[in-house]
Length: 518
Image (cartoon, rainbow, N blue to C red; front, side, top):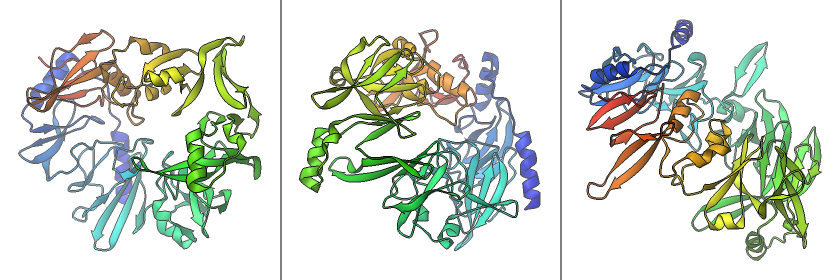
């Protein structure tokens, strides 16, 4: 094990590679070298999977083979190198030179780290540093390897470490000045329940911010990643949230929808901080923005459902929209640049208006917040007329600028909000996009900033051919507004500043100028 740790440390230093894009000539040379392969994967950390005659290996950006084509029955074609390691159920775990990082011959299966509600190795969307691999060495016996930035951090026998979904930190305690990482079995020994679901957003073990929600003695509470109690174990459900030292305690209502299935709505929320309840029983659905919590009041149809179907009488205050800070103070307006949202009350019903510093309405109608579209840089709102016309309105939080954007412009893709939030585009940029084209992919936290920029620079359009029942893709350079004069059978997204495409039944790479095919 000591030898393995030393090897990994050395490899983590060696794995630092250049991700600079290639020149036209270099890209064409690379494409000439890969024409012999049956399959080529995207580059990551200067490694790309290639397959010929059912044997797989890896090449570098020069097209040279750096890990010989020796692996058979590779399962994870689309897995990428990350933090200097690569995983596959058949091959096992290897470093960037092909050295095995777990004992050869003992790999029987690899369980995968979490991504949302399912598990996937090396593609975790919210943090980059952690890789967890579980190996079955014999029936009923497993070893879990936890790598951090490619270096072996620790192993566990027959257990899973407890990981914060949002930060990637592992639940731990300090014993005799050494950190002990805790797994599911450790938590069970301490009396915690339902710990097998601790990773997931859901009924149990909802990870939130810097903390974890756990269950003990049939009550829920919150601990931080050093296992210190943040909120006492007194809550009847797991819908607790931790934000910058404040806990939101949500009482919920479950609503069974025939099309959507079981839906969970916050019914009332209390704001808890420094062992005190700062605001109690605030009604109905709420959204977060920075240091603020919006309480949107109840929709009439939802309140009618609560009363008629569940016998829950909603209070008159349900008609009120409220705005609170995370310190439990109620406020009536919030600034966006020189402009502001302000709450107004008309005939007992409150609503938002968007106005300038002099009180002149910028948007003539009352506005509603778009659920889930909140960030540090941009929020999204709607009005009655924008809903009717299928539009969202984006507001730049720093400047107060607005842009109207078709909801259906990108066929359900979540663009442009994450790109706006990441600062890769501005609200004022939205008018320059051709809505017939979409980014090569949604914004990915784990991609480099440059790759995300390139996935936005080159946008694609899918055209479906009914006669062949196949799709063809066109690519436009949004900086030059010119099409690449090819119809591609397959398009990936930029990784290591190279774009993998399939054209005329061959694999090619394009560089950051869209060059590479002669």
